[in-house]
Image 1: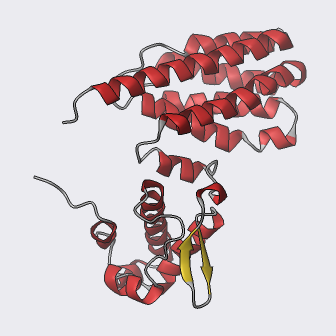
Image 2: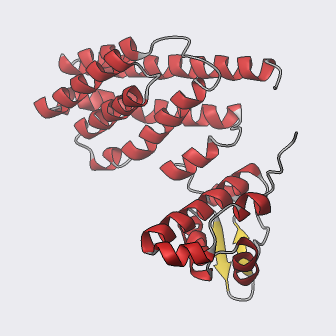
Length: 263
């Protein structure tokens, strides 16, 4: 039995405008967020190609049985992420891919709901290799006791819960966030959410068809130990090693999945 996953059918499953009105503003927020999510994933999948005009507000709100205000708000969300632009009389058009804010944590999440290419995955790891080793080096020189405590606590949770659990993965994000903040560099620290999203979604991606092939927690502990000793060179090297091994793990997972028959 096959399931129709066309955007019209998927979107029609959203609650109706009558339900939207009865549940109030909080529900409306969830509704336009759900619509933005669905449209965003469809754009990333290529259902709507760059340059293509989306269905207009009146037709869409009627077809999807949602309010026009919810539809407009969903489009505003996508426009803020650089994925669409609206012009009078021209409608709402999907923008060129180079304009999309791929590092937006929400967009990264949508990307991993599609089948991201190996090129895209490698690009994320290249970004991490450019930023995180340098961040670890700075953190070794500038960290405070509060930063060390935050990283050490996160590591304890990661070791106890493992990255196979939601709790362990949350602790992983907290480790990387504390490290970025320990740089004392506001610009670098502002990348924390994007780096964290890349870490989180690539970790989930590696576990789609089974447990992690290798425990990465000891690699994180080596980064922490170097920062604790204020050994900037070792901190940089350990972080670079951690990222390169994570990339190898991800690529092995992707090759295994592509070789396995689809069920």
